[in-house]
Image (cartoon, rainbow, N blue to C red; front, side):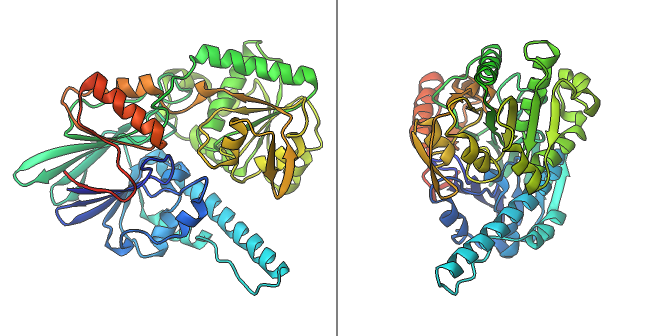
Length: 460
């Protein structure tokens, strides 16, 4: 087998690994790059021929793993997209949402060019029609179901515990007369994440390709995290402001609803009004509720439509409804995408609230280098929002314990489940984080390790 690391190599986003096995070409994920130079990278040519790819294996629905699928299909890929059952449902709505954003951005850039006197029509990266062509290729599989790709290649998914439907991939292939196994971790969840089950493990592999997003830090415990959330909300409301929570529409939004609902039920928060300002989050929540088969035991009992009653919940659909929220000056929680603040409705709420010292921003997820969210987390005092310089006077909270990713300890525990001694490729982490995690893996387990650079190829 040859494996090329075409994305998420010494960076977090744009996951894409290209495998060549016994004449079969396979992609593991086909994700969009986010942050600095993301747009340029997403528009660049693939480093392979899309019509020559036989299979795409999709670990989960997040756009940094799935967002270039319509472009792949547009450029000639016609093979099956093999993924988990819930992921097939989630990624469909996410890709249509992404296409809508691409179309709107292209329209805006075209108008901007015309105003500047340039006869330039900007084409979207892909359209809703490209998504429509991609959706029939999705094949949803159950956890544990053996899938044969032919030529001695088989695989199965098991629960990665990251978001609904997320999977790690266990793949067997023939190396001459010998069968070998490679495991792709996907994004590994932390234990006790709300709603979904803890990550599953396998014990034997020759090679492991694993993420390292939080490979150099530890999360706070969930009780500490929830205490901090309660204090942030109470303090903000006491000052007369609003709470802004940038959140990924899939995964984090549903977790936060579940937690806030529980806090009101327990009396730790008074009944509060929560605005979910994301049509995608609305649709994703419906998908979550349609897949109770992958809920953990507690969520199976409590998380259903008739139980989401501890908070007064408002789902906004139209732009007019979204704009109306900004007439509310205090006492509400606003959850909106995008999670890294690179677009979406959250930036409009930033424009109306960042400069207000009585307000707060609560970050509950990873902020990639080069994103607006990262600049805020890193302590910027002024930021550019929708072309306007805004003073950042709102209180900023970074509450890492809500992350859907395992921290350093969780990643090492996951890797420590292997009874064999696999060679380990460390990906999906910023360069310093991935190198720090590599050092920890070598010290703790003595495994042979690699931290691939983008475009590097290995024969295994």
